[in-house]
Length: 442
Image 1 (cartoon, rainbow, N blue to C red):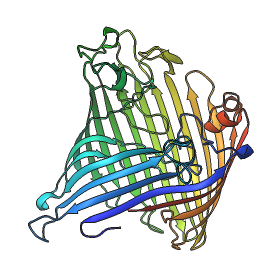
Image 2: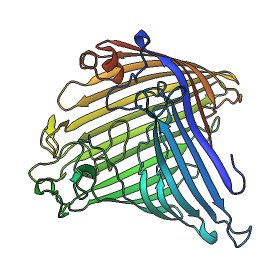
Image 3: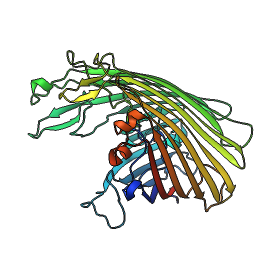
Image 4: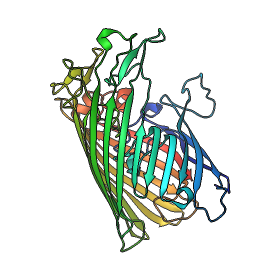
């Protein structure tokens, strides 16, 4: 919703569900895969975004667009977040501010754009698995764009006292309290987009990550890590289908990250979240790497049916020589190698303008270290009311009845390799029943 100077938007999902034995349901997906494998079972979540729009003083002919935007997110990792719940009770609510930035586009009619602040700084995602797969730089920083070329610098920061992903975490005791915090990382990002005649594009991306010395006088010698660096190169291609119904496209990407820029785990792809363990002799991440390949297609076959499919492959290794487990700087054990594979498709059958049948099939495989891969096959079906009567995969709101069934291989079942299995114990099959609503308005 918008007027001349103010706009308000929202994304959210809410519902009720159950798992086996009437327990509060947990995700059926494999550990470390996040929403990869399907997101039909995602928990309640709410985003509220408000933007202020400033009019240029030079008159209506000025094409400058000036915006200041803030976005709030509400979620929980423990259970219910609405109803008879407070922030101090079970299911305590987490509030985050993923965006607070100001941006000026086409300044004084020129092809220049600038922005400063924290923002959801990413391109397209694979929606059915909620995976921003190529250029998710979301953090705090600034950017300058001229036509189709953009240079940005980000300064990602975090606090996580349970983290096992140094080297960017270190023990900061300047204020007398030990705190693990993000250590002075700067990410330089250069992106250039080459548009195509059919509305698609070819996007080239390069990143350089720089990590300063931890030579603060109040930092203990054992945690005085040396400077380090990393780099990323990637290319993404998108083409739109000009024949048939509009909205169909194919997209593919390949990205290679080295050194401390080898991040991408837990269903995400942010390169600054370094994966694996360091070389404890040099205390650096030289020789760490990650390769990420994705493909996705949306094919609006006819007015009765659409098909959305994807495939992902991610292979990552840390700087340690270990092929299996290794240690971080704090002596904690973590895996130093992983391979993720995901293949899936969602069909949308437009039975009526207002009634769609969503059905989805996913296969995922997660191999950590030298152990056997954990694997899952999941089928979901969701009869869906679409009250605005639009035959479009992007039409919202949705009112869904969801049933999902997952089958795990023996290794996944024996080792409780999903949040669902951790709750219920070793099983070959998992089930989810829910009534869900999802909306967005921007």
